[in-house]
Length: 289
Image (cartoon, rainbow, N blue to C red; front, side, top):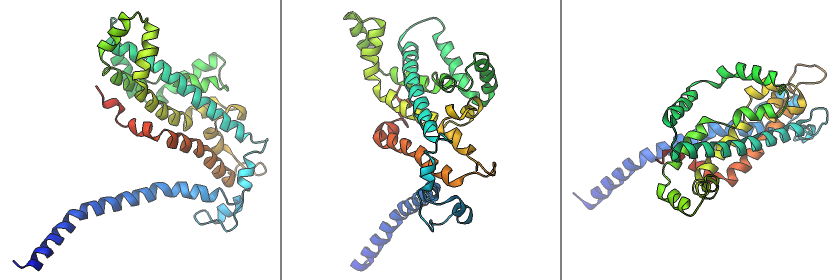
């Protein structure tokens, strides 16, 4: 075998090994383009007038305008208030959910009481029930309590998620019992043990689930649409699809809707960029046992 033949075979072998990586990178790039296209189009349409969106929905704006963003501040539509409602609902719901799930997970992971495993199994079984199945019963309950068309009714059903309980319990099972015993020897009570020992050690899973829960609450649509009929209490995700032309009455105001979508996406991007490490950690947070 000549030296040139050896180099040729080495080059062919190298290309053979590179082809899978080239194909995977190409597929990843294509998937990224498909996923990003709606976001790019949303941003472009936010700078078009309503008439231009109807005539030119998929191209670049012929006339760039900020009129749609200015409409967000129209006092007759209260979209800025709707945006504030989303911030309040998602933030308060996330804070309560993390605290309650962490306390329940601590009990199921480290405390001993009769029926612990059975109760936990029943709670996990509720994850198999679609949320749409329980919405009618919840609606009747909150209606009798007089909470329909309030911010409270949009927060209460979300503060005890079983998924959060499961993820946090699985993580807390990995906390050594010796650490808890040492805190008890030092005189720590149950509350001190939870707040001063468990919460700091479990902060990775708490932060990761907080991000997931915040994103879920921010994007919620069906339940807020059912229980919030007044514009003053609607979150932004429930208010945007219902924007129609005040004169015609049924034609959507596409420009304002797109501008509202951009405004609603900015907080999500801020949360993701600020806590992206915790967000990525949430992918494997339940694997620790």
